[in-house]
Amino acid sequence: MAWETRARGGRYYTRSIRRHGRVHREYVGTGPAAELIAQLDADDRADRHRDRRDVAQHRAASEAVEAAVDDLDAFVEMVVRLELVCAGFHRHHRGDWRKRRD
Image (tube, rainbow, N blue to C red; front, top):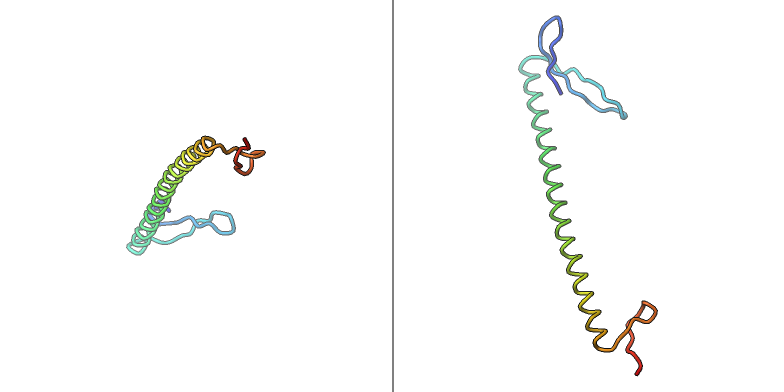
């Protein structure tokens, strides 16, 4: 997306479009119509940037919550394991919890 000036003079607006995995330049035009299209393209870019930023912020918040839940899960598992061992249970072949025989 660029305004270009050629040797013969005059400014015109072009934009890059990806088709079939390749980038092609598309001539848009000159004058007020091209300026309006350039502004619309800039608005679209800003919207896409804002959407990517929002997704990244949401992902970061989700990862923080997930990390907190993982920490809580590890803590609860440790407390439960401690309580079971104190109550006389053991893990049979690293599987089920069983009461120890006396």
